[in-house]
Structures are given as structure tokens and as C-alpha cells.
Length: 399
Ligand SMILES: CC(C)(COP(=O)(O)OP(=O)(O)OC[C@H]1O[C@@H](n2cnc3c(N)ncnc32)[C@H](O)[C@@H]1OP(=O)(O)O)[C@@H](O)C(=O)NCCC(=O)NCCS
Image (cartoon, rainbow, N blue to C red; front, side, top):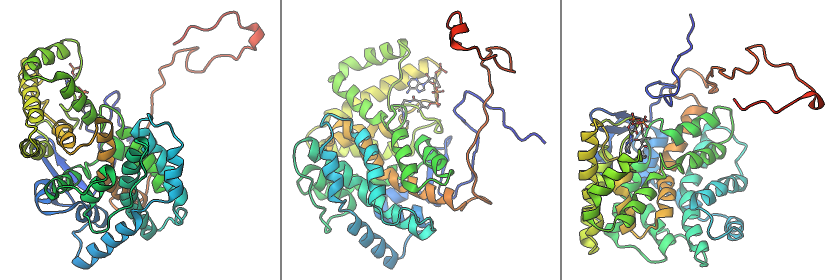
């Protein structure tokens, strides 16, 4: 029986490529589940490190396991000095996602267990990445501002420590808890583009860091994790609510997309966006900057109305729409919003890499190798006859 699935030009929409036990999305109902737990429950009750442990281990940790996991993360937060020294040599105006992607192989080189491919060693590598990625992001913010990177503070939560290392001031506990919730919300999301990139790379038996570097690259794109920075740019350009309706119509008339809207899987509002919407309102009021939430709501209302008029009834705000104003209120500049996404998604990437490497949801490991249909019609299917350079009369026209 021919088992080739003939689906093309659809970005594999609706094509299951593997089984997973890590997360589940119901795109019609707007439901997201990690390892059996609803995202709303985890956002309210869990912490990022507990959620990361859940994603990696497959079950909520015992008190003892969470303590040992947290201790391992604390130990791994201090990245080798040579990494910061190497980053300091790079141009200060480099894109933060490029810096992060460049730093991942440096973390690999510093990992003494890099060639140990046991499951236990991969979990330890995951812990080092979960600890190391935020340290790299925070260090780059300091370095590019010509400041020294700061040592981690073991007394702070994962989110609070990131804010401390990033800004150089101890954060307000309520804001730190809000960031903790954001990290829980962004930690995993089934076979999104960056997670699939990670899984595809390690399916070749490349190491975890090679997969993560690919994931960072995929996340940087504006249709994926890069959307939050674009949403903030849009809000900053708009300035006033009066501009919104005309701007939205103009964008759509020009065939442009509204960033932070639409999703490959959700056909209703992303459940994470609902939590972030409420957070952006509360944080804006607390910090005396309610304008960002107001402006976001104005864009949401105008975009929903205009998209509805155009028959696009399923395009709703996604996770990136309200995370932009939330991160802005936390003092995160737009170009660090996507790196902050990676600070969280590293947990999901590592869980998926381990699941892929050890075939934890299917019978045996597989190398991803899809088919393509050859449509280049140069000299028919059997190919062209090679002509030596001097005998070629003119350059062939491009296909
Ligand atoms: C995320 C995204 C890539 C998913 O897209 P998708 O479900 O695969 O849908 P497609 O890209 O095939 O688009 C389907 C239609 O909806 C339109 N559309 C999708 N997202 C849109 C948006 N944000 N604004 C306006 N129109 C949009 C497309 O133009 C297309 O219209 P057409 O059928 O007339 O050509 C897409 O919604 C998008 O580009 N959103 C903006 C970027 C973003 O916020 N990304 C973060 C995702 S978490």
C-alpha cells in the first residue's frame, strides 16, 4: 500500500507527523494542556521550574524532586565567563535572537557531557539549558549596554532572577510572579515551528544543543515568536486610539497581516491570550501606564470587526498580542521580547528533544525525511546533457 501522504504547500497543516505525550491543543475550543494539566490551572498554581519539571519528567514533581531540580538549575545559572567574553566581542547592535542562537553552540562546547547520549545526561543538559538561556539573554542586555553581566541571585525565583540579571534591580514581587506566569504560558505548544525544528534536527541523532540552535532560529521569524516584538512596534507607532480603525483597515487593504492575530491551530481565542489580556490591564493600572492595554484593546476590537467583515471569522488574538504590552510594562525592550519567549520555550524544546531521541511516544526513533515532487522541467525528467563551458551558447533562462 502506498503510504505517501500527498499534501503540499500547506505547511503540513493538519498532517500528524508523530505522536507526543507532552502537550495537546484543541483549536476549536481554545484548550491547551501540558502533560494532562490545563494551562489555566498551571498558570494560577504552578511555577516555571515546576512546569519545566512536569514537561521533562511527565508528571508533577514531588517536593524532593522539585528541590533537586531547582538546585541543579541554580548551580547551572552561572554561565562560563568565556561565553560572556566571546559575546562582548560581537557588535552591540546585533539582533538579540542572533546572539542567542550564536550562544547555544558555545553552551554546547562548555558542556562536559556533550557526547553522553543517555536519557539521564540529556535531562541534565536540559537543566543546564533551562538555566543558561536566561543568563545569556540577560548578559547580552548588559553587554550591549556596556555593563558587566550580573551574577545570579539564588534567593530569587526563576522569573525574579531573570529580571534582576536583566535590569540590575530587584523586581517587585507581583511583577516577578506575573513573569513567572508568562513563562508557564509560553513553555510548550505541541508541534509549533520551532519545536518541530528541534525535533527534526535531533532525529538525525545530532545533540540537544544543535536542535535548540535550530529552534532559536525558527522562533526568531515574525510569523512565529518574532510576532510579539512586531506587536509592540505597532503599538508604539500607533500612539493614539483614534488612529486604530483606519490603520487596521489600511493594513488589511494592503494585504498586510495584523501581528499577534491568527493561529495555525486555534480557530478561537488562544487561551493564553485571555490570561495575558487581564495581566496587561492589571499591570498597566498598577504601573500608571494603562494606555498600552487600551491601545491593544482598540486594535483587537478594530481587527476583529474588520476581519469579520472580510469573512475571516477565525482570526483572533494569539499569545503574542497581549504579551507585547505585558513585557513592555516589565521593562523588556521590543528586541528582547522574542528572546524572552525562548527563555520559557526552552523547557518545551528540551522535553520534545528527549521524547524524539528516546522514542517515548512511538515505537522507535525515526529520521524525518519528507518527500518532494520534482517540478523543474529543464530537459524532461531524465535530465539535461552536460555541456562543457566553451560549448554553451547562452545562459539558460531561470526556471
Ligand atoms: C500565525 C499564522 C502564520 C497562521 O496562519 P495560518 O493559519 O496558517 O493561515 P494562513 O497563513 O494560511 O492564512 C490564512 C488566511 O488568513 C489570513 N491571515 C492569517 N493571519 C492573519 C493576520 N494576522 N492578519 C490578517 N490576515 C491574516 C491570510 O492572509 C490568509 O488569507 P487568504 O486566505 O485570503 O490568503 C498567521 O495567522 C499569521 O501570520 N499571524 C500573524 C503573525 C503572528 O501573530 N504569529 C504568531 C503566531 S502564535
